[in-house]
Image (tube, rainbow, N blue to C red; front, side):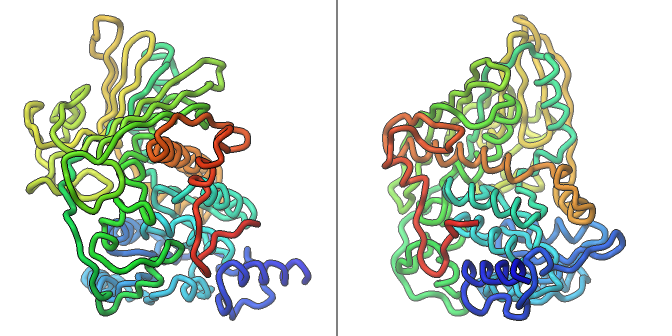
Length: 475
């Protein structure tokens, strides 16, 4: 019983008094139900306004999965989503405002996290300590320290954890990565992560009273509590350093993850970023233009490089990405407002000369040609110095289904986007932003996961927390 009491004390210590009060004396690994092969997996979705709505629809179509609870600090959003679920003729889920109360529910098997970035790691760690499996949206962390702590929590509490890098479940992407590793384009030495996405100004927002039905203290969570404005709240939190990571951590994390995956590398040894907030005068703190370069020592002993480009307005296309050449287009169906974090639904197939499209994808360069990826699931190759058309393909998969399959089997090795890989890719996000904010290149020690000889950079990558929403030092 001593180990059981210790786990109980750890959970209370890190999540606040009163959480999991019904689980006294029970190991964290025993909080959730034992899921059998024929049982329904009961999932709670946390943060249901934007991406969380995709989670609702995604899990609803996975056989043997029940959306057992919804959690959101905005009661109007929460009630709206409960109505949406009723329209889908699904069983009515429980509803929570405070995730700590949700985690006391022993009937919940897993939680799916689609909250603002600054909540991702802490909520996932709490879930692990409560014996829940975790699907966490990208980026898995708001800073490098808490990403490392999340990796430790998943391992310690033996949880299944899927990161929201859905491209890793797509057969088209897997085929493209195979071509990069089997020599189709020769020795791959460089990748470009491209994120050219139309983003209009967010303008200026004045301070105002917190809207009725919003628990703003809970929404703020680990971040500093500042007066409420619309630009510090729904969606625009992406562009505020306290809560978001800019476009690099919003959309470009997908392209960074794919580029690193295709290069076959881990942590970089040097990062340099430069950019700025151009054209608009508004409340956005993060850059809307950013160029970053990452330098790696590959596991095969060869040096490799990744380039990241973020653009927010008028741009060209590269390697036909974002045009009808791949059978899809990233053009928004109306105006310039694209659905966040994914290709908009209902897009049109437009020619390569259409200007108002997003260019979201990757290019890889090898000794015998290059390979380009459009979005998350389509690729083309051009071979030899004559750029002759080579293999191409397209195919989508189901990232949610992969997670549920692994919750049932308990085979963490079958997860398509494991948290260890997610943490490495997300660290590249944090390093690029830190280099930009500090105005200098950063040398990185992959073994220690620390910037070499730059304590200011390491403090920036460490973050800070507002009690009681504190990521634990000890896992």
